[in-house]
Length: 238
Image (cartoon, rainbow, N blue to C red; front, side):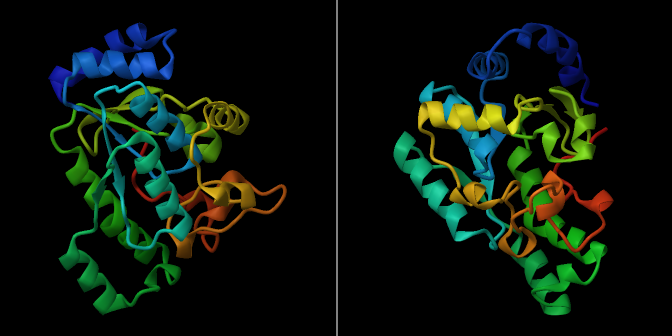
């Protein structure tokens, strides 16, 4: 653990108590100027945080991971967000050599064939670009919610991310879907219309489907796999 960052965690937990998201982000950006960044997938929860950052002009950078296989609706939300808030969200893309080697050796749909292939695809398209995006940052802000999977219930609102060597801030961890929807409607925030069609967690198009009534939240991601393996490697609890 980075000792300079580790000493801040207990203090920050105390200082963030009672603050709303915008106030919390303002506090973090003042303590770590130029070293607080937010990763958005343009999901409905990520749009809440994006709104708070941009509407309040908080100096937190925003980036997204463009895997190259996103839904058309996701790109529409990206464009609508740039236009509404007069901004340009930074994109990180897969390493060309890694992706070309994977596709040439295994084919474009190899992720369906095994968990290992799928995780390798996720690593190339998301995990490796994330590491580049987080390099030099102190605080990584996410839209992670505990409701999305059993594994995510193990996370804390503020925690150390060993893999990326940053403090991870999950301000929406304990928000419900109803909380998120209410906030989106109240502030007229652009959101992905796939959320209105049964899609809960929206990732790459080949790996995401709408969930059926009564299904678990994570059932729509990598539906051909055992439910215990459904993480891409971005959010690993330590």
